Length: 335
Image: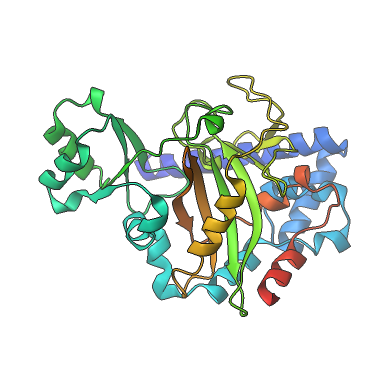
């Protein structure tokens, strides 16, 4: 079997495993038969254009067709990006270096393009204990590495390794607010704040998600095993956390036992204002998912996303009404 065939086989096996896992989770939650859930999932794929994970996340096993119509789907989310964001500006969000250059007043940390040569990189390292190396087009926490300089005494060798790995962006580590370290000290725990600039030139916040790491990684992304929950209007945790990778919910951190409920994000109001201000920097980009960290001095932008998540804010764990966010999106756009 070729290497490509092995990769395809592993990917298909993993998807089948996740499919079965999601059916088991929904079966346990709803008490409905696995056969019914299997057939209903397939129906929803064709009727509403959602996948099996969305079926689980949206809680479709618990609601009827009228409420199902109120959910924003992946297709609708992509159409919204194409409507509000100009294709020629996509690179500003897709390329991490271009993002840092465009939003340098909001990221509040230094960075360097390794392609400029070793000397600028060496100057960047002065006084640092660690930094993040990133591939320019990476996403979901992949292609990102926290480099601890104590492990790399030979800076030229480190430089060559990063260039070989195409990790061309080196940027300073965000000092995390002590309060934000409590849920998971191993990672930078961030908020996803999504904004839309409507035709009235108003920056509307659609939703705010809080993400924490799993304790085994330096990043908090869901695709890397992190967990997320919805924050209320004060920046306080009221709901359990959900992990895409395990399809499990958590009221305490599985690695350190931290109790999530009641935790309040510091500088929450300031973080919303920061994103609403940043939303006007590039007029060609009107729909952005901002990743925001909290430093001891306030909020900082980590990066921006051209395809903000539509699934996380519609998770049924945070939505007892069973009504999706389609009307929220429409109201934000119309102003």
